[in-house]
Image (cartoon, rainbow, N blue to C red; front, side, top):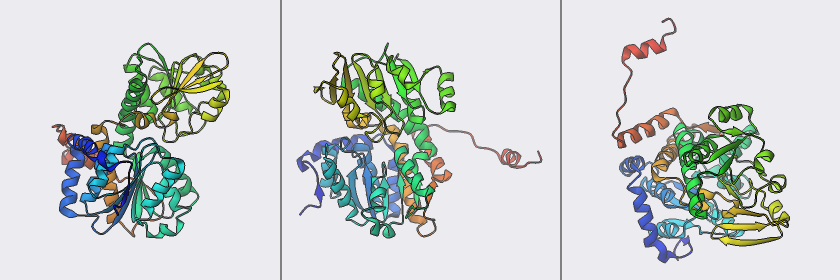
Length: 416
């Protein structure tokens, strides 16, 4: 029997077109793929991926496989898997266990199918594979030589394990690499989140009050893109330093309860839970639009929203309407899940080219240093960051200066 679980294998040709399109726009991964095909660094190794299963991540999977890996792939969010892309990977002979709109039970079963392959390296996005390897599949952890984590939420979960000394294998915090958070989190999230909101609602952003909940790198990107589209941007923060930064970047900064009565569009991007709840919903305007750009669907308290509503209906694809007793309507996009993937195609290919270059080289670093790393969370080595940046510059036809030997001596000599 075929070793895959996908919605419809006949969708594979459409998925292949998507993968081939992004491949043509990912020169960093293409260069790494050529290297992997020559050197086969993962030959004989089992690798598991839990990722947002769309075209760009599918191409990352193909690059890892080109390095010789025995690969198993699943999704990292029930609404971000694209069935045609999953089918395309399965048709190419890859182990794939994922489909769009999986139930909680199906989603967990797909993760467990990937772990049935007994991976030695994991590439995680959100920390679900790591969580299972520290709970229900703890006996498998000894086989894992290490792994990489893609996103802020997953890194936070790893940091908690690391603080408690409970991490069972080394992990690289890919999210914290410079080429990840400076470009993917800022430019990728900003563009893809606003693109998904506009495509889903078919409404203009210009002239509206857009409330950005959280001013980390992702929040900076959302605020920047919303402002560029002509919105009046409001930022809500719990960190006083970030709040001052947002103020000096030209945005209005206020408490979330004050912003609740002002905003037309709300975008949560904190990685925390209950960022918007009952105390906010009771203050919102008629027609307020809620979107989440964080990894898990916990930032907007859907239970409290449903509890306030007199009725709940589908207003449009990926838009739920909650009608309150006083006649106000509040709209929730993509069930409060990651809007740029659950209601869009995710970050642009050129942005993910760098992030997935970091992922691919980090996976190789784990393999090359197997047995030499402690069971803890590591930063991505600076050499990997610089190599990805150099490959990206080369693909853009950009040359930069180099320090002369005298300049290097000057910078490294404390006596000068």
